[in-house]
Amino acid sequence: MAKIIEGVSRTFSEFLLIPRLTRKAQTPELIDLSAPVGSDSSATGLRFRINVPIVSAAMQSVTDSNLAIALARQGGLGFIFGSQDIGSQAAMVRQVKSHKAGFVSSDTNTKVGETLRDVIGLMKKTGHSTVPVTSDGTSQGRLLGIITDQDFWQHEDDLNSPVESYMTKIENVIFGEEGLSLKEANSLLHMHKKNCLPVIDKEGNLKSLVFKKDYEDHMRHPNELLDSSKRLCVGAALNTRDYQERAPKLVEAGVDVLCFDSSDGLSEYQKEGLDWVRNRFGQDVVLGGGNIVSKEGFDYLVSGLGVDFVKVGIGGGSICITREQKGVGRGQASALLDVVARRDEHFKNTGIYVPICSDGGLSNDTQIVLALAMGADFVMMGRYFAMTDESPSAKTSINGQIYKSYWGEGTRRAQNWQRYSDSVDSGELLFEEGVDAYVPYVGGLSEVLATTLKKIKSTMINLGADDLIELKDNAVLTLVSEQSIVEAGTSSVFQFTRNSELEASTWGENR
Ligand code: MZP
Image (tube, rainbow, N blue to C red; front, side, top):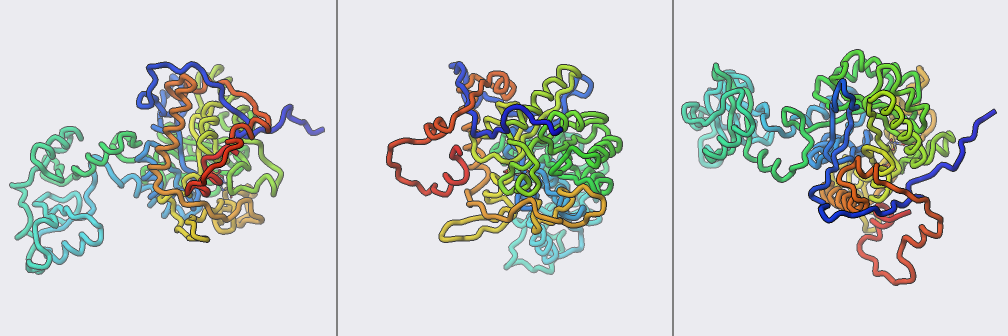
């Protein structure tokens, strides 16, 4: 006979946090929002952390390289969508990794004998105005000089002149020697009032460039999520069909975190995939699995070679109709509380801490804090990011309001049958599990996220928590009645509507 779980399936909006003692020493600047993503044990140590507990969904309408860059610069992590061919997904990963770094490989190079016209063509093509002149015109050739757009006047000088007549020759170039630290490179830039420092090896071959603008940029984004080579971090989605080809290409492109993206992770297909990736890359790769909504799902994914983190959530996504279509899923709060309880038991028994990501269905900042307080280490969101400037879809004006399109991976538009079907021979979506919709445009990601982070910190101060571990430990939650939900809004007052009629109906209101 079928089993019925005791208690009802609950959502975040049915809970409130009870304030705990706020301490005078607590200020927003001192609150630590960093969160683990890689699993943590005495054997491996913590292998990967994000600076803010927020990641973006692996969806066509959410995370391309542009959004992943914007989010990593704020300390979070973007998961590049997997519903595209392997080459283009790897290219997006590469774009994030090469976006900005202390030491960048020069992508705009020339050689002696080329003309100013050639150099201008190159600058137009790459958008870069500092061009190393090397013996063979490559980024690793012997450095002979540097030419920039400040060295000539495009409308005055003879564009057929050779590069060597206008470049700064190597004997006058300030350069660094391979092995110097980023700090030393920046000091050289500062001391010599330069914008760019070429770094060369003992034989005089160009290795990399360091730019003043990157240093300034980093100062403006102190929370940036960087790898050990100071490159932005990025995640990417895998599916259970082609991981044997996809994972190696993504790793080669420099991906930091991989995650199987499936609407139902409690499957032998996913387990095989996880084990294959682990066998192939060992602990070199941070690997997530999901989605699950039960203790059984957690136990299954962490068994065997195991995962670093687990994603929780089925059917809660704003564009998701899985529960209607298949009757499968669970209220997100109940799913999370159940899996967190099992994770904590697992930690007690094995000493291995498996971070949990609450994925989908968060419709306001309050719900993000509730998810974190209930034990999620970080949250994944789609709609939240789809509404921002940086998401891939175009803006559309409808009745004077600006919207962006947002579609689920389970729609015919996304054609992501790999996420939704586990039968071997499918190759198509037999029915849709997602909708194709519009979301209001809310502006730039950094401003929207800054407000969210301020609210999270503010709640943490209410709870006397200095970091996300204390938030979980201090959290006392209460279930609310329908009447308390009414009470939570304004009552018996007349309010002027700000320009945020739109915002109120989509993000920021308790529902
Ligand atoms: P949300 O933040 O928009 O509420 O939800 C985003 C999450 O919904 C994604 O991370 C993914 O787990 C899930 N998703 C993506 N596409 C679909 C679908 O088409 C879906 N059903 O449920």
